[in-house]
Image (cartoon, rainbow, N blue to C red):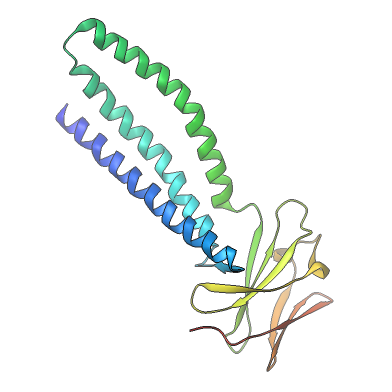
Length: 197
């Protein structure tokens, strides 16, 4: 019994830390978005944050499944113990639906509904090209603006639609004050500012 409650507490602490990490990363992502920036560390930061939430849901549920029977078992009066047990089962059934919805939307955000493609020029400068996941008609280009930060440079409606940007043969050519994004027969020029360091 003691080991079971210890594991329950450890799992609940892990879930709480995971949710805290989600909140911190997600707040940082949306603060940057308000300034027309995108935080990117191999994937957009909101996707990485959502994975923490995806992990927190089953860890928290497992912690509760281990801890609640031990706590309910400590109630001395039989009628109160049974009432608490049945109330817990009813609450768990209602909460399972909420946990499922949260987990489903977190998984959608974690896997990314749209596409984010990073392209690097020969001189080391890079851009991110984002495309919405619905019909692909919204394409935005972000230029590097420091480590993990990309600043919105322009929209690229000429790259919208099908095939998607990630499925095309795209390259980034470096010029002095401009980058050229070449995707098949289409070329997009991107004005470049010096990145903030």
